[in-house]
Length: 137
Image (cartoon, rainbow, N blue to C red; front, side, top):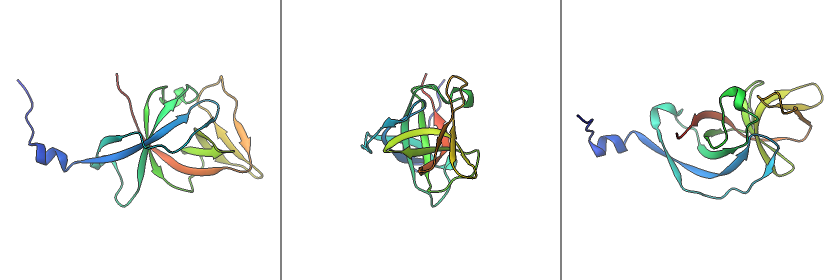
């Protein structure tokens, strides 16, 4: 028994998302935006008229949110995120994936692993918000 699908029908339902490198789920790491292939994602999981990219997750600081080392994170490009959203942030040219909180005089980037302390800073650039995680077993 096998599932048979029309290749043309299947191709119309997939979006190719560029893989642009690695993001730290731990201490921030230096990262350059390097095209590293594409990731096929079902279009029904993406919002219309939005731009997406994918990054490989390195580290375990977000394990409490179900984000593991080696996962592929699909990121919706955005310069602004809401408090509590998981975002890709840039601090001193280092990229990290953390939960974002705006406080009175600073930004807190919170991990989801008690082994990691929050990162407090004032100069943060947001690249995007987490849309989905893809894991290969």
